[in-house]
Length: 272
Image (cartoon, rainbow, N blue to C red; front, side, top):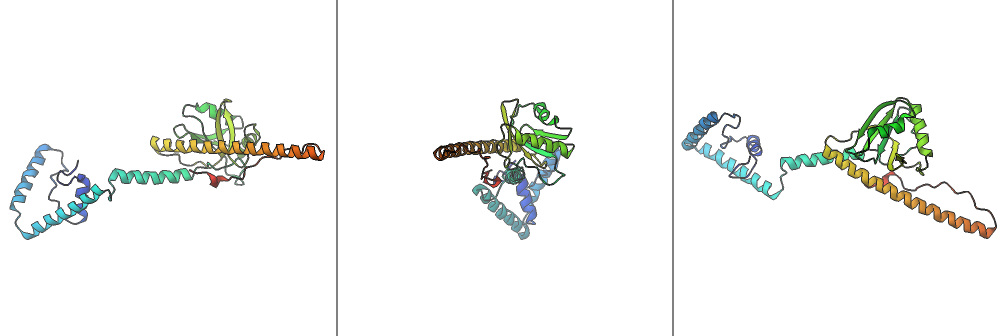
């Protein structure tokens, strides 16, 4: 509800007058929901307003009027954030912090910290069955916890033992799809759905569906960036192999072994 004279939400109006130390001449028993009580209080307020003749009362009314006019002007100009707008700004800041802590730029290289037994997996669709994801990891050992947020298209898998996690990482490094150990490993769920996996300590994945949907948008973006880097790396590798083959033919020597392809791009290249 808003004040009909100034167009200010009633809670903001009452709070502003209270903070300014001014009696609220406009309040009409908002604390009570009883219609009869409100009517009685309204009558009392009306009688009181008719009897207000002292200069102090007039000064308070004028001060209240000035405060509300100033507040109404700020609200109409947009310089003073409304409660919903302010809450949205706070929510976006918190979401940005949450996203910045997610290991999208993580790798599959085994970390030195022996307490880490978890993997961050992202890129699966919102309708991918959880058992499809967990079955991929369960063959390496018992799982201590599984946190899959389909709405956010990411989650965490934690092994009960570090040795099981290391065995899983070794498999991910050597699978046919994953070509670069300096980025999240690429693999296919059910031989058709691309996902990425990296080591990562479990972090918060949003409080609401709206926040999780925004995280999913970031997941889509990172998946595309990684795919583009893979494509660039493959083209660079083919050109390098072709050049070396031509040089070896000119020199009369056989082709040299193909060097392991690596990316120069690191995690900070990601634009989130």
